Amino acid sequence: MRKFEETWVVFITVLAAMLLASHQLSANSDFGLIGNYIYWVCRVSAEAGIFIAVLGAVERYLGARLSQWGAYGAAIVLSLIPFALSVTAFDLVVGLPELGLNGEANPQNSTAKAFAYELIYLLDNHAVLCVMLLLPRLIATSAALDSAEDQRQIDGAKSTYDHLAKSQPIETTSSNSAASSNAFTTALEPALRGDLCSVEAQEHYVLVTSTDESRMVLYRFSDVVRQLPKDLGMQVHRSHWVAYEAVQEIVMQGQTMKLALKDGRFVPVSRTFRTIVESRFPRA
Image 1: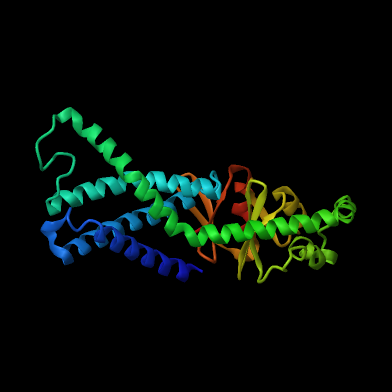
Image 2: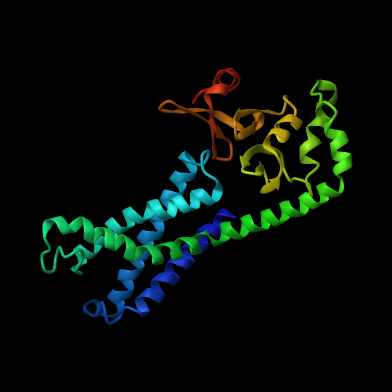
C-alpha cells in the first residue's frame, strides 16, 4: 500500500501542476510555454512535499492525541503557512510580484496583512490538493469502517452469547494462553492475517495492526486489553497496546518515551507504564 501511495502522490502532483499550468499561460507569459509548465511543477511539488512532511510529523508527535481525521485536518492547516512562505520566496526569485515586495512598494505595516490575504487566497487550492493526495487513505478508512459496521451487526446478532462469554473471567495462565491469545483476534471476520503487533484506540474503534495488515474494528479498547493474554503483550499507554515480539527497543526523545516497533512505527509510552516498560525492553 505504501508504494501505491507514493505513486499516487507523484501522479496527483504532476496532474495538478499540468492543469494549473494550462490555465495560467497568459499570467506567466514571460516564462514561455515550457517555462510555465516547469514553474507549476516545481511549485506544486513543493506544496505536496511540505504537506507530506507535515502530515508525517503530526502523525508521529500528535498521533496519540488526535483522531485520524483530526491529524489530516491539522496537517492541511499547518502545512499552509510553510507552503505560503516557500511560494512567496519562489515567486520573488523568479521575478513575479508577491506581497508588493518587487512591485509598487506597500507601507511596511501592510506586509503582514498582505501575507494573511495570501494564506486565504491559497487555502482552497491547497486543501483540495491535500485531499486528493489523501484519497487512498480516505478510501481505505471508509472501507475499514464499513467492515467494522458489518462486524457490529454480526456481534449484535450474537449479543446473548457474547454477554455470557464476557461475564466469565478470562484467565491467562500458561495452560490456556494459546486459547486466550485467539479470544480477540479469532473473533474478527475475516480472520486477522499475520501476527498481532499493536492495537490503538480511535474513538469508538480500535486500529488493529499485524505483520500483514491493518484494519479498523468497532470494539472498546478496554475490552481488547482485557481479552488479550498478558504473555502476548502489554498496554503501554491509555490508547496503545503492543505485542512483545513487535518491539525493537525503547527510544527517548527528550522527556518522551516511545517504543520503536520492528515495522518502523513508534508507539508512545505514558508515565504510568514507564517502569514496567523499562524492565521489559532494552533502551536504544
